[in-house]
Length: 220
Length: 239
Image 1 (cartoon, each protein chain N blue to C red):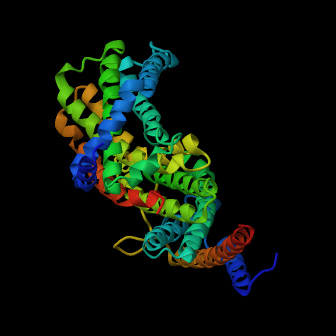
Image 2 (image 1 turned 180 degrees about the vertical axis):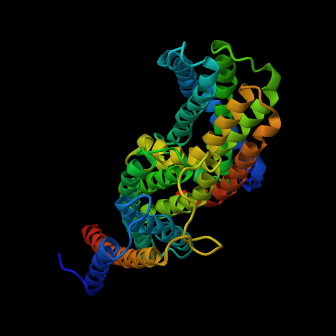
Image 3 (image 1 turned 30 degrees about the vertical axis):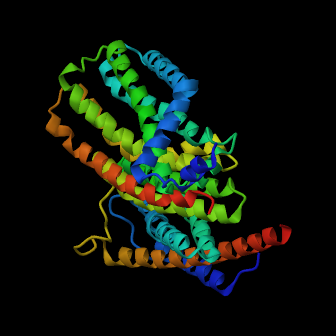
C-alpha cells in the first residue's frame, strides 16, 4: 500500500504519542499500567461519538438538500471509519474494565450508549450494502444518518436513568480538567494524533468510494 | 359511463389531507381485516411467546410478576415488527405503491395513513396480549389499568413512527425483511426501556408520580420522531 504524506504524518504521530504515553507519562497511582489504555480508548471514543457521527449527520442533511454525490461519499467514508473507531472503543473498554472494575462489561449508561452507537453504525453500513442503485442508496442512508443523530440523545437520556459506574467526563466539563498535567498533555496529543489518523483514513476511504462509483458508472 | 359523468369524475377535486390519511389507513386495515393473515400470526406469536417465556425461567426462583413487564415488551416489539413489515410488503407483489404515488395525495399523507393502520394493528395485538399476560402471569392490573394503557399507547406511537419509515425503506432493499429489525431495534431502545421500566414500577404497586419521568421521555420521543419521520418519508420514495 502506498502511503500519502498525510498518512505518514498520521501514523508517525500516533507512534510518537504511544512512545510518550508508555515511557514519558507517569503511572496512575491506583490503576498502574492498566490506565495507559486511556490514551487509546478516549481518543477513539471521541472520534466515534463526536467527529465521525457528527460528520455523518451533517453530510446527510446536506445531501438531502443539495443532492451532491460527494456529500454521500463523505458520509459513507465517515460511517466505515467511525465503525472502526467504535469497535476499538468497545474492545479497549472491557480490557480496561476487567482489572479496574473487576468485570468486562456492565450495563452502565455510557457503555450502553456506545454499544448502541456501534449498532447504528453497523445498521448504516449494512443498509448501504443492501442497495445497488447509487441514488437510492444515498437517499436512504441520509435518512438513516439524520434519524441516528436524533436517536443518540434519546438513548443517552433513557440509559442515564440507570446507575453509572463509568467515570464522569474528565476533559469536557465546565471546571478545570481533573487530571495531572503530564497525563493531560499526553491525552490531548493522542486526541490530536487520532484526529489526523481519522482524516487520513477518511480521505483514503473517500478515494475508494470515488473509484467504485466511477467503476459502477463505467459498467452501466 | 356517460361522457358528462366522466368529466365530472375527472374534474373532481383532490381529497383533503386528513381525508386521504384516513382513506389510506382504511384501505390497509380493510386488506388486513379481509385476509387476517398477519394479525392472526402476530396474535399466535404473542400467545406462544407468553407460554415460552413462562417456562424459560424457574418459577420458584423468579416471581412471575417480575417477568411480566419484560415479556410484555418483548411481545409488543416483535409482533409489531411482523405488522410493520406487512405495511409496505403488501404493496410490493402488485407494485400497488406506484398507483398510490400516482394518486393525488401528498406523500406525507401516505406515511401518516400507513402509520395509522400500523398503530391500529399494534393496538389490537396489545389489547389482547396485555390481558393475556395479566391473566396467565397472575398480575392484578386493575388498580393501575389507565396509567398502564397510557404507557402502552405512548410507546406504540413511537415504535410505529420509526417502524413505518424503516418498513418503507427495507422493502425496496436486497435484504428486505431481514433489514427491518436491524434498522428498527436500535431505535426501539429509547421507547422500550422507559416503557418497560414504567410498566415494572406500576406492576409493583409504586405511585404513578414515580413513572412521570419515563412518560416524559416517551412523549418527547413520539413528538420528535413523528415530525421528523413525516418530513423524511418523501425521501424514501422514488423521485
